[in-house]
Image 1 (cartoon, rainbow, N blue to C red):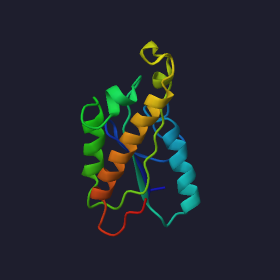
Image 2: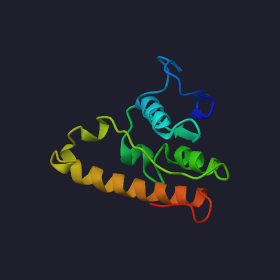
Image 3: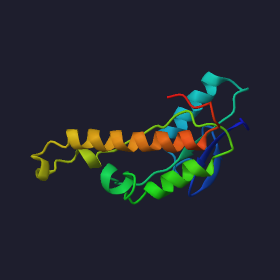
Length: 138
């Protein structure tokens, strides 16, 4: 179990064991990491880094350049430079962006799709820059 860690920017590194931080700040990413650990086997170490914000909106809170949490996310990616290579970015969004917004005649799906596409594109660039040359594949 010592090879697999979850890093939460606010509460430090946590082991990926069934009762890690029970009732605390981890959610579906803990079970995802546990399943990945079981799939990879004991010889393949990995680290999962979590950035989260409750009740957030993708554009207002996460979008590159102005979102409230964007700098935190970007600095988290950059802080891992030299410690391995980024392999994935997982986005878990709650309902905040699905609430009907009458400014868009109630249909927020096209706006959300564009915002998500822009966010993922910038995160991929950051991950590429933070990985060793020649190792990034997307």
